[in-house]
Every structure is written in C-alpha cells, then in structure tokens.
Length: 392
Image (tube, rainbow, N blue to C red; front, side, top):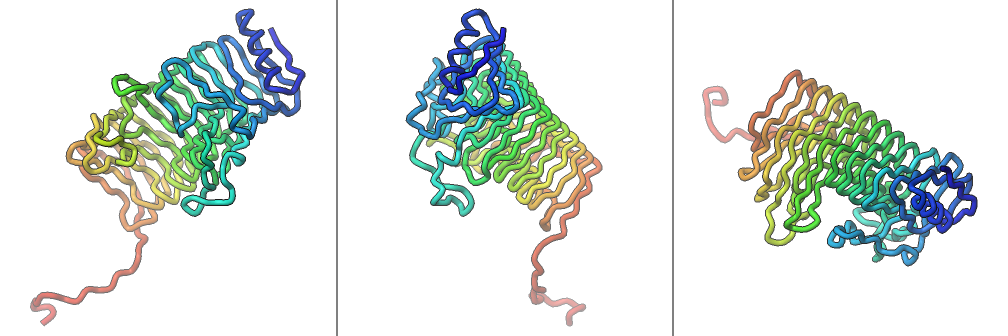
C-alpha cells in the first residue's frame, strides 16, 4: 500500500512511516518538492520512496536532533555524536529508493572561516549528525538516491545483514572532514554496486568495531563492484588496529581516481587507547580489475612498529592499472608479519624512485608485474674515499 506524503515536512513523513508500519508495511512516497526534516525513524517492511524532484532537507540546527541510542549502541559514539538524519534499528525489510536527494546541509556544521591542514574547514564544537544510520537490521535496500553533504558520516551500517546498495551517488564537499561515504561495520553479506562516491574523507570504510572490550565483531562477505571513487583522503579504508575480524571482502571493477590515497589498510598508533597494542585480524581481501590513479599511495598495507595484531594476511591484487604518487607499500613489523600478499598482472607508473616497498612480509608473490619508478631528485657524485688502481 502506498502512503502519499503531500505536506512537505519531516513530521508528515514520520506519520506516514508509522502508519505503514502499523498495518504490517507499505511504501511512503514523497511528492515533488523540498521537505524540511530532522530525524526520521524507519521501521520494518517500510520503503521510503524519494522520486526525482523530491528532496529531504535536513535541519541545519544541531539542537533539532535528538540523540539516537538503540540498546547495544550506548558506548559507540563515532565522531562524538549520536545524532542522525535517518535512523533505523532492529528492523528488517527496510528500503530507501528513488532518484531524489537527501541533503544534510553539511557546510552549516563546519567553521568555514577557519581551516585545518590548510585544506579542510574547521570543526565547530558540536555533535554533527550522520546522514543514514542502520543498526542491527536485516534485508536493507538503498537504491538510486543521491546523498549530498552529510555533516558527518554519510551511511553507517553496523551489525547488519543482507544489505544491498546500488546506483546511489554520495557527494560531499571536499573541504569537510569526516564525511565518509559508506561505513560498513561488523556486517555480513553486503553488496555495493554501480555507485559513485566523491567525498572529503574515506569513500568506503570496512570496519569491525567492538561494542565493548569483551564483545566480538566480524565484518565479512562484502562485495563492492562497478563503482567510481574519489576523495581527498582514502578511497578505500580497511580496518583500524582495535577492530576485531574483517574477512572475505572483494572489490571488483572499480575506478579509483582520488585526490589522496587509493587503497589503505593501516594500523597506526594514534588510533590506540593507552596501554593497548592492537587487536585486528584482517584476511582474505581481494582487489580485481581496478584502475587506480592517486597522487599519494595507490596501495598501502601498513602495521606500525610495536603493534601486535592477530593477523594481516591473504591480500590479493590482480589485474590492476596503477598510477601512484608513492611506492606501493607493504610493511609489517617483527610482531605482525604480513603473510601471503599476491600481486598479479599489475602495471603502471609510480611517481617515485622506488616502485614497491615490502618489509616484514612472508610469502610475497609477484606475477607479471610491470611498474616504472624513475622519478627523483638528482644527487651529486660523492667524492672517492678510498684508493684503487682505477683512480690512482
């Protein structure tokens, strides 16, 4: 059953969602126009359809947003915020479809009169809302819509199963920090296809954040294909050192043309709490048939000195065309040796004097790798310090 929303307010949308849920499900359809809204809570078996010409305009006033804290999510506050534009928890059969737009008015939540790192707008001392937040949901579909200018993360899926995302556009001003495109956190069976991401922060992040120190979190069976990624940060980020387990992730047929890094799996100390040495186990990660062009590093798999992770192993990079501003970096440490790294049919240009840096790696395999790295500063000829018959 369709519930047509004619009054252009978030309150009217929420009333239609509640009415559809009450009868066991239905489709909430917006008419063309702008709808001013704050937090909308989606529920089981409800489809929010935003057709072309319709636009949800999120409030630019942080005081309009309540904290959304589902049971089980009390201790997790990404970017120190528990606010969001569209929320859904403990639900199934939920959809957001259509060719319309959700606009988060992100620039209003940043200090446009100051800068960080010379590139980004400053942060205001307020909690910035996420755009979409799904927690512990099943059978979720996001299709066709444009998500523009999220104040913080654009899409956060945590502890969800069977999620299908296709033909979406995620657009975030490159001057905004922390406006990730898609954060897939401790989920199982997620498919992302035929979509476009252009953000200031990570386009796609794969995480396994534990809800508590004693909790387990597994992010697995993720498939991303036929997408185009561009960002000022990392086009793809896999894991942080305190994450639990990330496994069985496939990226295929991607165009990764960014303004920063391409593929990054990194465990640096700045993400650790005091007295910790890391916990993550990440394995069975594949990249196939990708075109990567990034001014920083195209590929980085890095574990900082002193870090003690449970494992970083079984990474495969096949059929890649690469243009990288720095060497392809594969660096473990004496406590966390990278294992089973495969480069196969990798060709391209590295704008550096070194093509590949591989340190503390066990079973590093290369087949048909053709890289050119011949760019650097001219160095003076050192004076001879010894004697030989040649220079006598």
